[in-house]
Image (cartoon, rainbow, N blue to C red; front, side):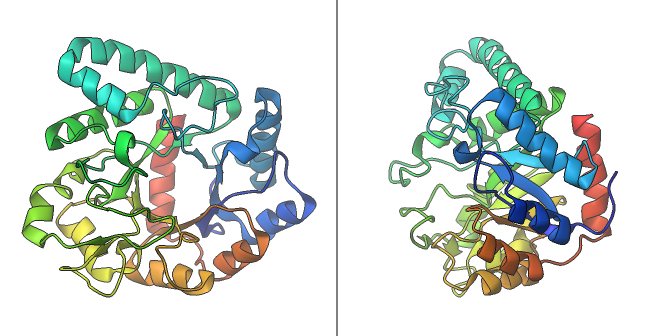
Amino acid sequence: MINQNYRSFICGVRGQKLLKNEINFLKKYRPWGIILFSRNIKSIKQTQKLTESVKKIFKNKYYPILIDEEGGRVTRLRNFIDSSIFTAKYFGDLFTKNPIKFKIYYNIYVKQISYLLKTLGININTVPVLDLRRNFTHKIIDDRSYSNKRYIVSKIGNTCIDEFHKNKIATVIKHIPGHGLAKVDSHKNMPIIRNDFKYLLKNDFKIFTNKKSLFAMTGHLLFEKIDMNNTVTHSKTIIKIIRDNIRFKNIIISDDISMKALKYSIKKNTRKSFTAGCNIVLHCNGRLGEMIKVAKNAPIIDNFILKKTYQFIDIIS
C-alpha cells in the first residue's frame, strides 16, 4: 500500500487526463501526492478517470490527491457546485451572529463538499485558512479568512478540521505561521512582516496551536524581526518556531515553490525548503521541466512521513 520509495514532493499535472510523459514522470519519480486545479476538472466522469489513473500507477487506492476547495473565490469545483457565497468570511460572520445556525449550515456544507470530493477520488482538502484578517490584509487573503478576531478563526478552524475528518477528508492548515499581516500577494511579491516575535506569538502564530490536522502549509512570508534573510519556507529559525512554540508536530508542506515570493531557482527553492525543515515540497503549475528539477532534489520519504501517511490513511478510510 505505502512504501518508502515515494519522494517528498507534491506536483500538479497540466490537463484533464495524464499525458504519456506525465505517466512516465510519475512512474520514475513517484511523488508523495498530486494536487488538482480547475484546469484538471471538467466533468465528474473525467475527473474520476484522472484520479483513478493516478492511483493505478501507484497501485494505491489511498494515494494522496489534494485540492484547494475553500469556497468563495478559491473553488476548483465550480463546474459541479456553486459555493461562491460560502466564503470563510461568510461563515465567520454567521458564527458571530448565530452560532447554532452556523453549526447547522457548516455541517451541511462540509458534508456536501466531502461527498463530492470522495466521488471524484480526492482525499485532502487544503483547508482551513487560519490567517487573521486585518483591514489592510491583501485581497489575496481577505474573505478567505474567517474573521479579524483570533478566537473566531481558531474556533472555526477546529470545526473545519473536525467536520472534514468525520467525513473522511484530510485537511491542511494554512498559511502557517500566519499570512494576515501581509500587504502584498506572495504569488507575485515577497510580503515583509515587521511585527515583533512577542506580538506574533500572541496573535497570528497562536491560532495555529493545538490543531488536529496532519498537514500544515507554509506561507511565503518574511518575518523581518525573526529572520531577515529567509522566508518562512526557507527559514530554519521559523520552522523551529513552528515546531517548538506553535507545537505543530505533523507534516509541514511548503506553499507552491514556483511563487514569486521565493527569489531563487526551482532547484534552489526546493533544496532550501528541505534544509529549513519542510517535510514535503509543493509545486503546482504542471510544467514538466520544473517538476523534474523538484523531483531530482526531493529526498525519498523518511520514517516520519511514512508514519504520518499511515495516520492520514486512518482518517480517509
